[in-house]
Amino acid sequence: MKKPNIIHLGGENTVTGSCHLLQANGLNIMVDCGLAQGNDVVLPMESWPVKPVDIDYLLLTHAHIDHIGRVPELIEAGFDGEIICTHATKALLIPMLEDAMSFSYMTERQAAKILKTIDELSWGFEYREKFQLKKGIAFKFGCVGHILGSCFIRFEFPDGFTIVFSGDLGAKDTPILCDPDISEPCDLLILESTYGDRNHEGRKSRIEVLRKILGRALDDGGIVYIPAFSLGRIQELIYEMDRIGTKVPVFIDSPLGLEITKIYSSLDSFWDKEAREFKAKGDHPIDFKNLYSVERFRDHKKLLEMDGPAIVIAGSGMCTGGRIVDHLKRGIDDSRTDILFVGYQAKDTPGRDILKYSKRPGGYVVLDGEKFDIKASVHTLSGYSAHADQKGLIEWVASMPERPGKIKLVHGEPQAQKAMRRALDESLRDWDG
Image 1 (cartoon, rainbow, N blue to C red):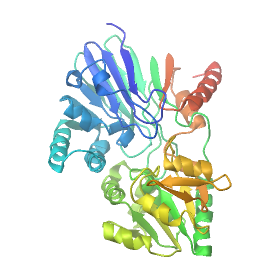
Image 2 (image 1 turned 30 degrees about the horizontal axis):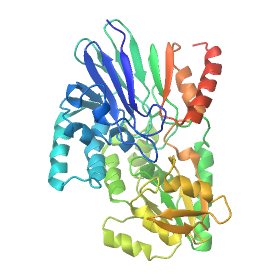
Image 3 (image 1 turned 45 degrees about the vertical axis):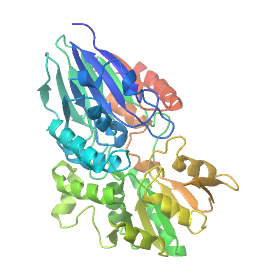
Image 4 (image 1 turned 90 degrees about the vertical axis):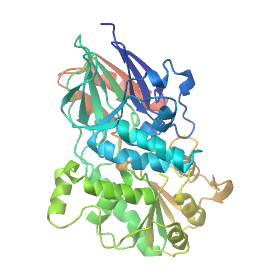
């Protein structure tokens, strides 16, 4: 058998736009098909080495838009193969794409037709069980603790050669989520490197920082704005706010975030032990007394007129659009305001600009074409990242029973990949697995 060929169509040297083509034994297998964000780019489909109609399988590592956002485009271009993912990703796939497509050029009828096709082509599979594709190629999903349903994928070929795609590797001890599984050995590891150049705060530390920042809102009557991704981050924040007994009103101003939270609640069989035990005791881990839902746009408009103290969680997570932009336009020039970032901010996004220019005298950000001075206090809680840090990535690789034959880094900015490569080289020299 000819050695498998991997072509990175997106996400090779960037954080977003994950899309990888695996060619083996006459099959074209795609891993992820995501949208690029900020100034990240992906290869246009008309420039791909194969036509979408000739792709046999699409395997998805999880349901974040930078990993699934181009699936509708793939369908439009003629793909009619199987879409394979975990059961939880299958449950999250259509709601996430439906929201993303509401901002596209498509009519409601066109979008509905494509979503129906995606639903018909997609299949949910269990973790930790081997399944067969065509021509003797097998795959297995392993849990990675990034969001519900997230997985790494291990391919096994007829000649015994193995490849693992890490997907987005999560951190240990993440609320609601099970810790990442240990991968079986592999000849080639395709490893993400988003935070390959840094380490996060621990969970205990970040909870204390969160408690302190939220306490300030109660002290000065201001509002804490949290730009957050609807899938994963909002649910994690709710969980932690419940644990620390948040007293001020907390508003979830994200229709998609509310829908995803309902889906998370229905997928409790995939929760970790801690979350299941809370629920069994009558303490629902992602619901509490001072938590309020803001579904309708007219309620969003009313919320914009409200004074603090309050906490507002809204999308988008990088402030590129959505309801958080309205909130920031209202409060970013108020010294009583706190802005709390709990996720990665890509280059050339308003979120990255706020982080960068808030540290400079006279710093400002452009929102909807208008300039706003940054007088708010801006905070970053790296401990809430859904990605493993450098230490976590190294530990995950080191947990494998045998050293991977080769490691290829993807899904990271150049400086992160460079630092990660140095750390890996040092770690592998001391390999005793």
